[in-house]
Length: 59
Image (cartoon, rainbow, N blue to C red; front, side, top):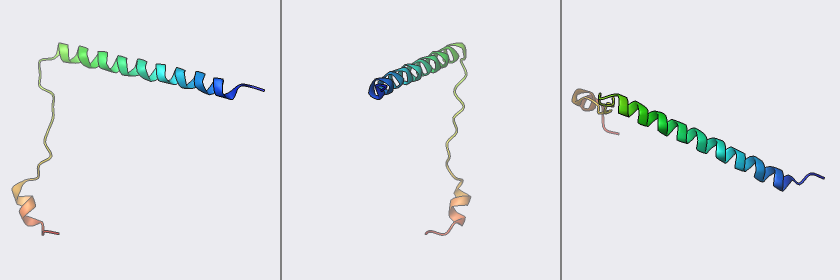
């Protein structure tokens, strides 16, 4: 009979290694991107206009 616990732990360990490898690759790509560009990151705040908020009734 197969040792299902050993099979499970082997698969779990391989999945952890794969996830760690993907995270490391993503971090490396982010660092390369930030090192090559001098532009600020395009973030925008989600703040409603005053006219929009005044026209809405309070709940």
